[in-house]
Length: 451
Image (cartoon, rainbow, N blue to C red; front, side, top):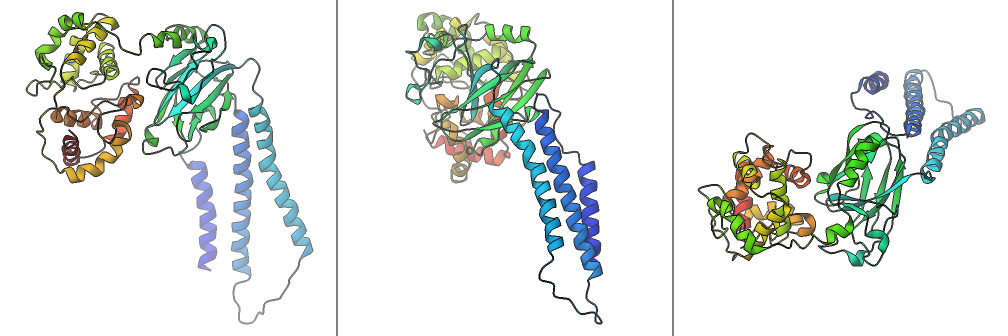
């Protein structure tokens, strides 16, 4: 009889948990209410079956439990029971599957007026492409992908020159306008989903997939990759910003076209002009750019120019150094303000890259053997040799100031750095830096062996 009581309590407890649970769908922010209806129907059908089966099982246990004075009857067939079970099962299966067919029919028929854009996934970041004034997206190909052309744009296709390329994880969209998102992967399987929009689709290498939706609520929503795509899968996140048409057009006009990015990817600068501008920087980073541990300033030589430019831009826009606990970051905000524009930044970077690169001395005490295991995660972006990867926006680690590396990892871990919504790589590093001080020292001690 105890099993009978357990089954009754299990059924009641499941119903109570379902209706009182705080975990349910986020409020919908797109046109796909039909998907919610389909899921609700599935819940109802499965719920009725769950209750019926468990209560029937409990009733059978109670009614037909063992009694010494009663013998069991052998009944191999019951046509009436079998007929009812077949009919009820068919109705239940049809009720669950039929709405899905209507949803799929709507999903594969994109509205003709839909605004077509492209989302590109790679380990472990998102980037986006919008059609230019001609309203057409240029063709792409994996054979065209390189450091200067991360989207793999076909430079021979004139339709691509005015395409708007967004090489970060924030996707802006207009409200109440159907959007068709073409999905392309550069490496492995990914999945594009925004929970509030209710639609998701895999990005499959070698083919183009798509999904469509109409944003119906202003606000920001998180983009997730819901396909296990490697060690940094949990950090592959982005944001969708749904705006008014006016705000969206203003944002779009501020973005660079593919043709414009081709003029700036090589970080050309004037080292002679940069030498004069670097005079302010040298007071902390040294005339040789090797940094100064006493002043908590890192080594600059050996770092990729794209990384240096991004950090200077982040300091100027207070994307980095925005925390009151980031004392040295706030100092850099003031220093970056002495560089009036991007041309000045490029000149300074050009001069820094003309300086000889010498590895810093190791000062951090730790166990490199334990750190080697921890570095397996870091190497996915920073490389097995710790020299960084431009394609991952990951800077060089080997040969840099180890005390600076320790401080930055702690800053990420403690939320001092990487909290600004526009700091995509910082947000990823926060998720990668969840370790105690001892492990951080071990990790940096191993990085020191890569010199």
